[in-house]
Image 1 (cartoon, rainbow, N blue to C red):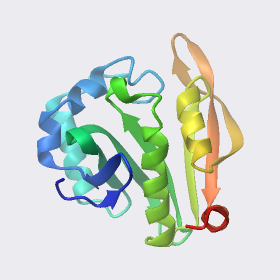
Image 2 (image 1 turned 60 degrees about the vertical axis):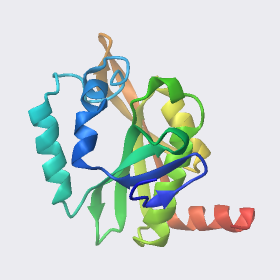
Image 3 (image 1 turned 180 degrees about the vertical axis):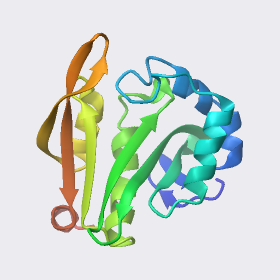
Length: 187
């Protein structure tokens, strides 16, 4: 296990590394099934654009992007991050990309979300995390709900996918809700 940062049962999160750009990451960004419900995939991604993104997050004071590593295979299967971290409001957006289709539907997204949520509330002292998902991306919505996020509203017709405008489901989790949840579990 290399450079573990946050460790779960089946996965661990670590800093995204330059060598991750050489793997399947670029293909994930160009795979229309993977990016179907994302803003990514509208324009083709290139190695140069991926490198530029990598450089921007390395120096960012408002973004943390972590690689999701499947422990048993030491395999990079996706990324999760906190974006638009706001020190005054103590809030951030959480986003996830699971590029390895063979692990979809196995609860890996929820495990990754839980690891990052714990870090956000207990180490970064954030108070509110929020996420959004196209209404048809039920797996993503369920993963956030299993992690304790609550649907708080709809951004009407905010995505254009498959020839139609679709709503975005907005979800959030507050620090107090998280602390109440882990207290009830006895963590």
